[in-house]
Image 1 (cartoon, helix red, strand yellow):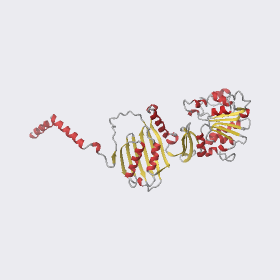
Image 2 (cartoon, one colour):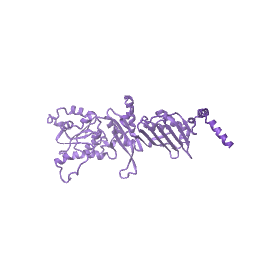
Image 3 (cartoon, one colour):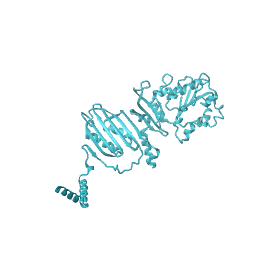
Image 4 (cartoon, rainbow, N blue to C red):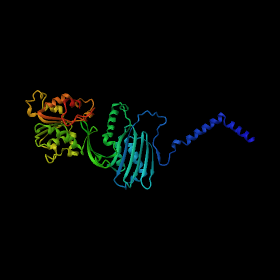
Length: 443
């Protein structure tokens, strides 16, 4: 009974307002002296702080990702074994590319290698080194698209003494980006456009495979790029082969392994359909040289006039896609240098007005020596024409075709690359008879 009375008396004493206040002050003092935020595991370096709990999560679910399997030149590379050296390399890369590291953790792997994990303000970095296999596996995820991951890849290769040219990697978007998510400020908007180029061409950059830019240049008209890259074999999709592809403004134009199917199909039927052996040929576009090659296969051809707007496309094709314009066996080694070739790098409409005249349709008979037996139009896909560009829309206008048809001999042939065939509502007519006019109009 005495013990119970003493316990109740002590409880009443401890539960007074003053006792509770003193206890709270004591706890606050303890937290000030022994701050929980200052306690970090061994190997973790806190570099910055972020108010993640108090911050409103209002930014869009849009980000970027780099996955890089970096090939290392030598297994004796010291940084692959050095925990501090690898950590310093990551911090140097982050500082140079605008990535804000909040904390970084490192550990030694057994028997060899190191592991690095860095928490970013807007993402994370993970790295593992495999010295014996000469590999460094790198993954970076960051919110938004403010980091140039192509630049990060090059810096990773430099810091870890790797060879990006023999590595496999991918750079891709994460989440869903809406145009309104970008900053409307003109300067920031232009920077955003430049950063968006890191995801292009999407067929190459989004695939985790070997890729090497052979040629990249922003010409006065478009972004021209030639990539060497892995590609699955057509008959054996599990096996890879190295190939080369041309891209304009990130849009795939042609590939060295199958360009002949396109160029032969575009050119040869038109020549076969010609009522007379073609002597004079006009090519509109066709900067790769494949269309030119196909026309010069015909011994009857005396002159092929080729007019392409962009000299940089021709330059890239000459140097990095020489098979496109290889006329060995029926002409010069390069079709561009063949004496039958007349090459112009200028706007076709301006060229047409200058060489054929605005009155070609009215004075066609007087200018019959200038007319062509075959005209091949090898321009952009209609599905990929730049929006709002008057010159691009004019290339497929009724007026354009009426004017260019006036440059054709009466028995000549005109053929154009017109994009993908539209889907058909019903079955095509039987192929054992000619199409009727009504059937052609429906198609």
